[in-house]
Image (cartoon, rainbow, N blue to C red; front, side, top):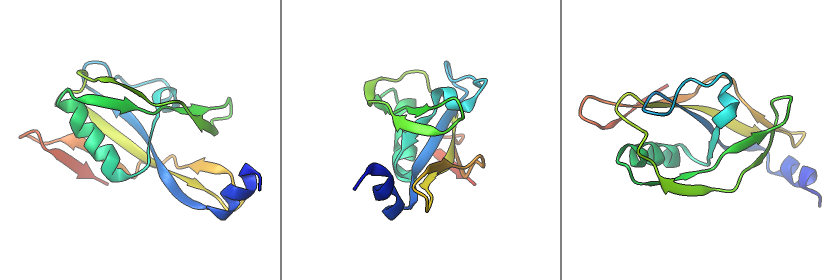
Length: 126
């Protein structure tokens, strides 16, 4: 079974495309796909958002795109200390799924946003 055939059988949501904004080094990119990261669950994205605020060691798993904006892969995960997230930072998440034809798709619509509340807790908004 080739990869396309496998993806046709595994259709449905596979994860989330995340973009970071604010903080010391997360500015608004010209195109959000320039630094898009992959998270397999909303819980993992939320945990990583909180961990980077605390300056913990974070994991970066960037998505790769072709010239047409289609996801072509996931780069190898990197792990290093992440001090650039402060109380002004927020993360936007878009759904990634495999359609019935086996193609990887992602939505333009932001389905979830994580930010920090006044006491440093993670605030979730749709």
